[in-house]
Image (cartoon, rainbow over the protein chains, first blue to last red):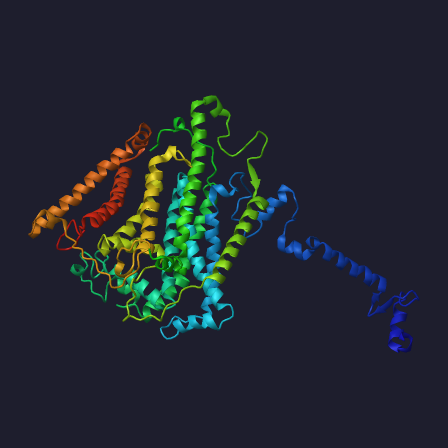
Length: 309
Length: 311
């Protein structure tokens, strides 16, 4: 066939290694040999069998993954999601019975809540006209909308519980003691933020349950000493229902459209932002304060050193 | 016994965490104290055997010479974390498929819910409203709880029990926390959920929530019982009573703090400021059960009435 093509013939004469009867051909100066192509295909196929040897894999994971201690260490240190972990931990700390895993579970639940919350935000308008209808829409028309809302609610309840249990465990193991004092205080702030997150979310469905829970909750703010219009020394300082701390919380003197919008913004933007900042500090300090506190060797009474001031 | 009423309360999807709490909190308390006992026994053995104390690895977990003290995070910790994430996901999935999040009627400011309850974790604070005015129950007490929790590491001068479960080395700290967390916080949540019905009245478990129930109770102020009727004296009397309570509670706390030789040793390590803050927090914490008892047993509403605030 090629012989009939005058240009091809011309090419062939320019490239003496062309079709010399062994099946190989030349196209624009590149040799096309079926055996060569087979060989090359085999290399790609072999790479499929060993994906860890490919450049793509190496470029993503950067380090070899095998059973050596070096690889295991690098596997943690060179991964952005794992790098908050130390390379090694106390051998007794990986047992369930010391930590109960409650801190980690709380963090995981925070992620679940973030994801389900973002998905819920796609379907929700924080307005008096639409909020309740959006929930009905979610429950009855959105695919898996009910599951989404249920997961968000139950994960929130579970998180309040696991955060409290985490605090209980940290207290009972004395993990707030030197050098971890400050991290305990950060943890208390995170506990408060968890409760506030859950509480601000309560109003968002705009149903009777949330409305009255938030009414009860914010009515207490009326009684804030000096800053509420029904609190001690509040009226004396000029507090009225229209300028006190409750007004600031609700954006009005009753739980209405402004309160819904404020709850939404606190719930979806402000408090998660604060919580994220405090969590960064919390996790970072866990590492900086020497990692997880124990199980530590027992200290005896006679080994107490005198206090230094 | 109205089992149906009990079931209505317990099976409310939003009350699942409280029903769970009834089992989870005692379980973890037991689980922690069991490990504390094991460590305490080891501590006792080491105290009595100084030679052993020098060579022992000082943990109840098994350890032999030649074993490494640390293990690689990958895979030993990460697999635990992965497993925990899977288990939590499965629990959440099953929970979300089987139970629906509650949704009531649209918000209606002209139709009050009865009982109208705060979210479950704030029911302790709402229950406190029975015993204190809102400025104490809703503002001062929560602030004191948060401040009290934050300062714990800075007033606890006991260096023992850092990083392991123990009871004997930290008796006072553990009792204080269990008192505050379980006896006050958790049980008040349980009261607020399971006991309080319409009109925030006290319904024992199994009593029918009767919306027409009336309780004829006359709550009196303490000064009325004593017979003081005119104002500056009412305020002065109340101030003396509250001050007297603070002194008595402070004295009782001091007796407990200085009860054993070990606790006196710890007390001597504290600065005056640390001691003062600790006493103030303990007195405020004790004020709650005392006021609860005064209200529930003696129907006393206020102990201190002034023109500006009532306690």
